[in-house]
Length: 147
Image (tube, rainbow, N blue to C red):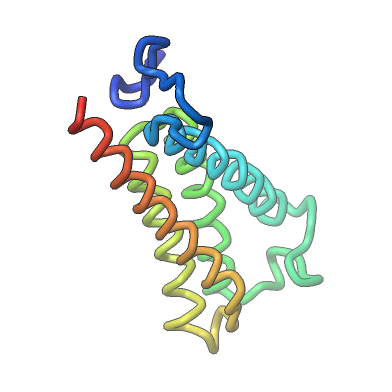
């Protein structure tokens, strides 16, 4: 079983006794990654339910979706669950797989709008979560460099 990486472990000695807003950025990053893991676990399970026929996507079963949409559905069903595990473990590869998944969604809904539809809200949310992750990762790296 994998342990939490040392960069995320926080002992009682490292915790600030100051105000609540002076929390260690590494702890915030780990919490953010766990929150994303829960969301991606849910979306992965939802996509697998469509693939196995337990639910529908936009009122259609998996077999009635276009071939590109079926491919994207299977791709995201797999990658979302892999990203969820990696994010929950706070493993470096988890962030990479999640970024790949998020960037793929942005690419599908901006570069291939005719096939996958234009989902501006989804694209904005993906970009916002990427920017939040990069900001938190930068802050956590700076905090680690200070120690």
